[in-house]
Image 1 (cartoon, rainbow, N blue to C red):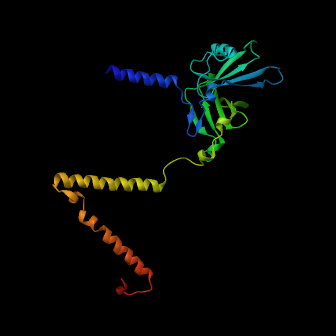
Image 2: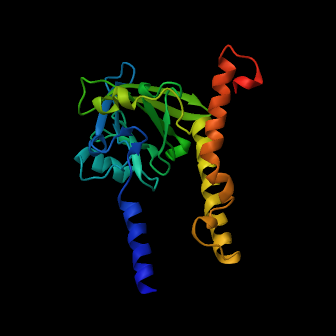
Image 3: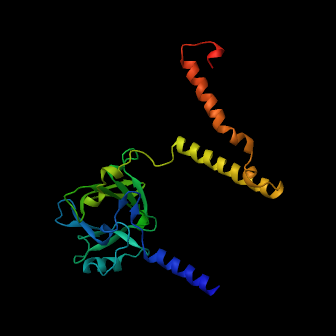
Length: 253
């Protein structure tokens, strides 16, 4: 019992400490080690909004001294993943706003019909319900990733669309998929067919062996039919050949 509890604790701890930063054919594990930043002018004031962004893991103070101070001034608890730093408030590191957390890292395709166009992830849980959508798009010129655009708008709550361009968002041709993955109708039919045939022989042989006490080839269900199977196939082939020949009488068969 103690061993089982220890294993459960280890699994729980690993799920907390290790954040999966992958989505189907995309792997952002390397990019998630970086802290991305971009400046956006606040009108003509001479000040900027500075945005700090991570993909999956939270922003911690060990990465950057300004972000460290920024995190300390955000009064919302949780794993902060998107920060807006307002230079016009208070000087120094400015006034910080938590505009998204990684409580729910739900990746989605930008275009479900063409997966190569990239993905986006919603970071919610910011102050006053603020949300950030991080769009991750392919750009082979940015191997380390770069924030290239920020759009702020209000739709009930304040939302931010931030674009991250990176070479890790470029998927190879063999990984491109133009639709949702799934089994085709033919594959499903074959699975059902072979499963049914396998169950037929297995259970039939068990019944013949255990209940009917048969031995040898007789344990095969309907063994007489299967023994005559080659002859039946040959007769069918000859019938088809005769149908294709110029002879129309039954004697041709």
